[in-house]
Image (cartoon, rainbow, N blue to C red; front, side, top):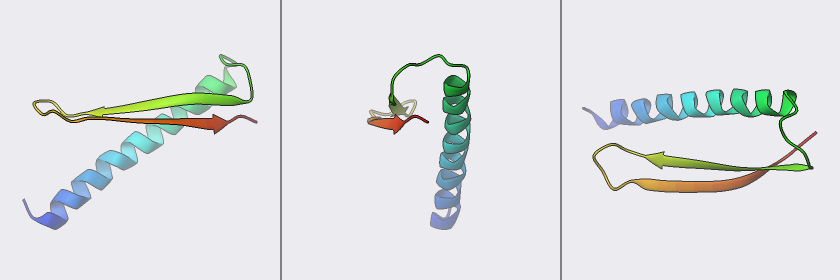
Length: 63
């Protein structure tokens, strides 16, 4: 696989993660399943057959 194809494959995956994650967060907020002014979130990235375990924590300010 070429470097360009590899990069495009990663970008496609990350775009899917971003779009679907945003939808799920919006649904959760819209359904009123949370309280407070901020939503604490965490994403964990793993890759089957590897030692990859990358965690990103964050906060989203609510409307």
